[in-house]
Length: 393
Image (cartoon, rainbow, N blue to C red; front, side, top):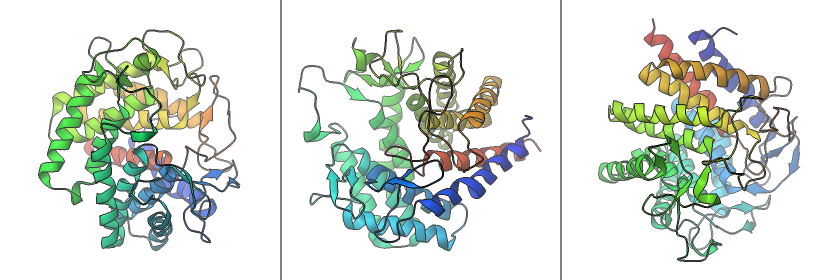
């Protein structure tokens, strides 16, 4: 296909508004109990009614964000409200920690075993408060954000499986999501908290987790940023590393920090070179930094979100730097992602392919895939291509 900037902007816009959102609007709404069904087969039929807090909050965020960024459509606001009210009533334990999973009716199923439910709650209710003007939602957002700050050094708290003190490690997931979450919360935070948290997270990601020699982003390191020779210590999660880099670019762009933007682009390109499957195409899910067998048996699967986050990072990197390598990689990842994950017949995108690029799970949503990565990437790529095409006029 040709790579006309206007045509690409239209592709992402039309796919978001005419394909992806209608799929979730038609199939995911639980008007009886509130919230959303996320376990949807290829055609959108519900195959499991349980509700997973990450995905419930992410769908509230998606429809609220679109109200705030595009237009305040009544049906989008109603969809966001349907999830926000359900979550406010059922989502937290007595201490204000967010559960991981609920029954369809909202009874707790899985304990609040890490802080990522709280992260997505803060994101969701911040955007929902902005979209709806409902003050109570601000309070929910701030309480969830404070939970994250309070628990960030021990994200699993009492629920951790590791033995204390033997091999302390910290995870990239915490500072990377805190960086993005803090930008999301900007309108609710003091400028002092905002700037302090952003500076600390950028510093930690780009110093402790980035291996300067390999140019790769490690998933787990010792508390001082050094490497540990074990499965977790050698783990590279290409999608995570690339997603973290567009978060960093977004922060650096606000500060006109071209050095950090280019450093983030370098990391994206290094990860892509390291993680691309030269035989079958696409990006591996997990890799070992030293080339040993990864412990994750699903390491060679090709996942939707990894490729979508790569498209976002590449088009953002290209817009901010004009680097030819970003554009070359964008085309390569675009061709693979759109030809393998998109489902023009029934809408939305498949989530899980085997190494050869064949559909592995015939689903559009599940316990981990909901209304988030696809619509967010469609929106962000659309906006980036619109900006690029106006720059080139």
